[in-house]
Length: 292
Image (cartoon, rainbow, N blue to C red):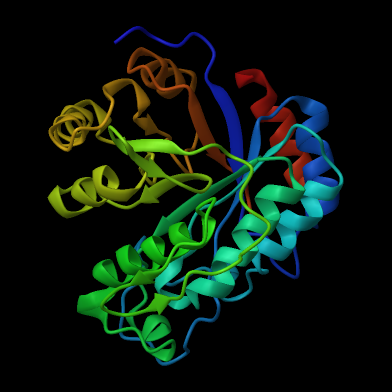
């Protein structure tokens, strides 16, 4: 795999009601030459929670204060022309899929095809339960809802009937701007670029090969060992080896890390910004500009 000399540098941030706002952040990112902005999602964080925080210790305050990513990305889209926009991650199991399909298609349409759907299965059992999600079924539920959304994104009215949900063949516009890819010869994959976040493992890699464009490894560690396993699953599923996309996410950058990702053939990296006010975020962007 040839190295990529200059990976695109995107960013992610927990935007909250106390941080920098989407509009000045998006403008600053585009002016400085960053490639994208990805936003996380939590609808709420139950106070009585048995699920441990994913990073250990106390859960940072920003998890319970996040703004809605689609509203924020809509603002970012309106004041930029080139900046790519994404979620990292959308908790698909916690959404009505018909409404979510409309949100995604609208954002991709209005931004001119700049949207990436980063999706995942979540970590907070109590949050998911409030949405009626049975924890052990969440992966199958996400697969079902993605299939329904892709039916609505298809160019012709397409019905879908799954275990958890269904939709009649419908007129559903706007359509995502991004062109269909192939899951297999003659089998189209409709909708925006889709990356699944999560830890390396057989279940995750099978899902990526089944209905996504690639992987969003949180933190970006361990890729030397995990990438060959993912590529083997991808190719065994009949996917084009050249089409797999892997985007390390929420990375704390060093020159060595970015050189390592380039040597692995990765062409995009998403750097973590502090959940902070405008002055601190702008200082961090100026620091990260050395990696552009």
